[in-house]
Image (cartoon, rainbow, N blue to C red; front, side):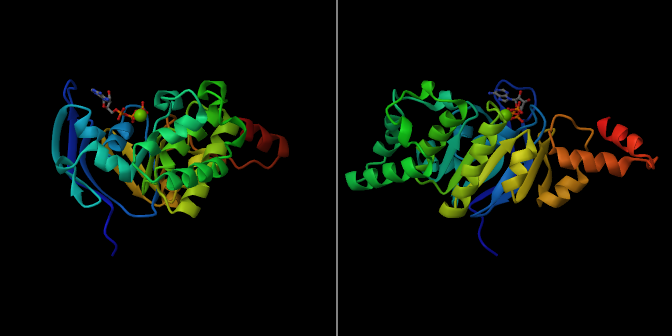
Length: 275
Ligand SMILES: Nc1ncnc2c1ncn2[C@@H]1O[C@H](COP(=O)(O)OP(=O)(O)OP(=O)(O)O)[C@@H](O)[C@H]1O
Ligand SMILES: [Mg+2]
């Protein structure tokens, strides 16, 4: 059995000013090459879990921690955000919150220049990012002039160019239209395949996510209530829970399975579909 690259053991976290624990008794192993969807309704603990993957919790937020997390073998309390962030890159749902530069090119270079790499390596990586993320046409533009999908592409590129092993994305497409959403998931799929990146993606809307995820972690009431493959998750899901948006095909099949009066007239069947 391979060693996990990130492991939670009996982990709980309460924010300093909160009444209750936002994560309770989390036991979780993440392996190299995993493509994980973290799903759940609002306020159940998805973002909090992601923040623990690169040290944002406990270093940027105060609170009470129980149990432990190891990131690439190192106890979270023994390391630092700087150290963990080199291995685990983080992309937020709002790309603008991540931007610090006035042009796309500077944005891509910003993190790279902090890594003290030789100039040739910086040039090679910049060229790679421009090709991989199709940024050729707008390198000198300020990020705010781009479309939402393009902005998120730049945000992901500026993290991936630093070559983390793991990429964590917190609802990366929640601000995008359907085309923008599928564009981002296409890129993530390519990155997982070509760069062997481990991906951990929180989402409410599972239509695109389920095209690439190989494992689902469902968080409900601050606990992991499901951790397993996609098919069983889709089969066992409570479709009355409308805060998690399942693909339309899954919803249709679930409704059909529930039907009692099987129609025998085409117009009745069409009527039932329209409900
Ligand atoms: N900085 C904070 N201080 C205090 N409580 C917080 C903080 N951040 C989150 N919480 C609380 O922790 C719980 C889990 O929140 P979290 O943001 O992790 O949920 P989420 O599943 O990501 O929700 P959403 O779908 O809305 O993004 C919530 O009860 C929330 O109010
Ligand atoms: Mg969240």
